[in-house]
Length: 476
Ligand code: ADP
Image (cartoon, rainbow, N blue to C red; front, side, top):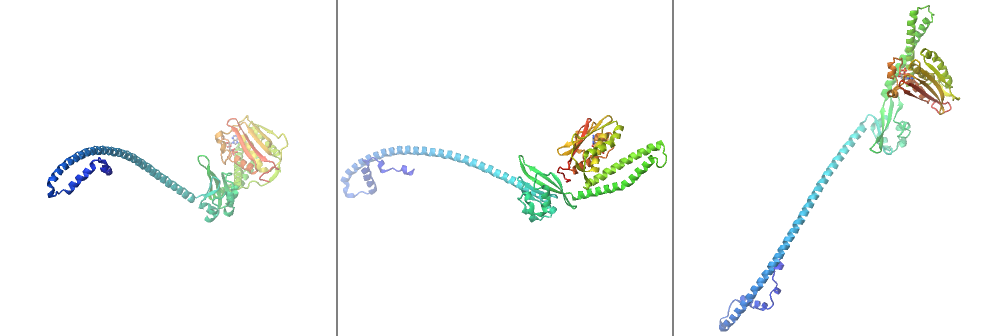
């Protein structure tokens, strides 16, 4: 800006330049010499005139200059104002941008804080879950979505006698490849190297090491996240169960002898072997005999249950014809059916059915139980039909009645121990609730299946199959 205010010599009109120089010289010398006075006065006048003229021109130049300076100054001031305005605008914009970036920074900081919070919480949750898994009293193995072992807790090692280092060696492997850790072999064998087969199964290693093994699929929102293998120690429960079974078995055995003695003594009295009895005495003794029979049935049922629980209820497996077995039983029940005013039909197979490998006495228990139930739970005037046929490559036995039926809500419990449906209890029929439990166990031990279909108030049909002697079965 200063540069623009300087007056360059080129700005001064050319004719004035020497005069300005002479005036300057006069002004600079300032001292006059004494001997030159007359000429000097003349010259002086001229000089004054000249000077005046110069002054006039200078004045003019000054005003021109002033005008120019003023114009320049205005121009500069305008420019300065413009600049200031621009600076102000830019400063505003910058300020805005700074504010925006400050806001973004704050938002980012908040997000980071939230993320940090989430991460910390996730970490805490992970630690908690890990602590739970590690200190869980059950043995746990966690497999990932492709069935590779992700985690195994120390309890699992304790159950199967596997050290921490050995357990670590199988991390990342599939269950089929656990072979190198011998301790886990019973577990691998039970699962068959597959994590999809079982939901719950018992694993017996020794009397002091009985486990319940369960597989639990862990699902995320859309697909499988992993599988949890849980090993629960049931050795104590099994021991208590064993003791209970032993107690019932001993008690039932002990009761059998005196009850049999009572039965035979009553029979002898009733048959008149010990002398004549009055009609009234007979009536009472008959009732006592029947009660004693019920007691014998109960004891036999209890003994059968204990045998099932001890896993030793099939002794005498032989090849047999189911038709002969069923027919012989039907004959036994003909009288009872007549007494109860029930029709008891038998329908044999339309073609020759295959032989079956069975424990005949146990199989009689199954068929008797189904026929007795049909007789018991069908009111007078009803009908019971027993039939035999072939199903797939096995033998199918069907017992159909037109009795009270079983309500849909109770169907799931029918084969469980001691269960009696509410309508059966209401009717005050006698029963222990053990017959079907025993029947199911016997049929299944023979490799067969038992099921039923029923409509309350209409009737029930119980069916069971036994594989043929030639077919693959657990008994071969
Ligand atoms: P129990 O007959 O000694 O009570 P079961 O185990 O043989 O014991 O039968 C269990 C229950 O199943 C019976 O109490 C009864 O409620 C029901 N049930 C069995 N068979 C029939 C049937 N044919 N009709 C209706 N209910 C039946």
